[in-house]
Length: 282
Ligand code: PXL
Image (tube, rainbow, N blue to C red):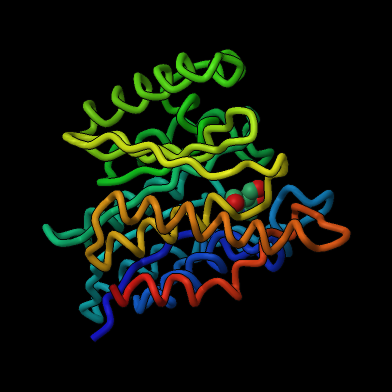
């Protein structure tokens, strides 16, 4: 039987992010995604106009009914939240369904490029920090890593390369050691390179891909989904990191060769799902 992952994230009609990304990627890995929407949006919130339907009131049913149906999960993965109360739900979900074999990944979605997403309050960021502390793996981008550790993104991102990596290392290990977890930091940009790093007990890895001077919607979600799917299928952290980085890179390459690119619409990842299917053959 296929492995099952509970995926707690929003459903955005445009942006190729959140649940849309996770469902596609996990399915390509041969994992069954079991979705819990945090919110349903016309499109992701970086578009000039969007509308959100908050799903909070329906979320407790998922715990109650799934528990009665004897649901169990090999993995639990959470992303975008619509309000701070949802953290209590996700925490309860983890406490209810996690056993010693369940992999928990929290992508602490809060912002990008030094800015907090417009729907996120200070309280939501604080609660996201509490949630992230419960996970086996977290996948913050540099902005989110700075928020989680109380550092100034603009100070860190402006540092020369070696100092920047040292600062990332220090921040990542402060979380990894405190929470006994592995911290995967995505999207550390330096010139025309982009670095993704893993920092955990007995492991430190840094993988580079090319940065094309443009950031697209959903790449963080595609990365986290690929990393999570890869780990769930038993690949080691290095392989998971490399597969996720490569999948995003080839999808960006397939996007930037087109005319009239709008980064809000995300990347051409669909045609590259076959790369993930192949990655499970080896
Ligand atoms: O990809 C992160 C993300 C997820 N969900 C929604 C978003 C964003 C980023 O803006 O708006 C609704």
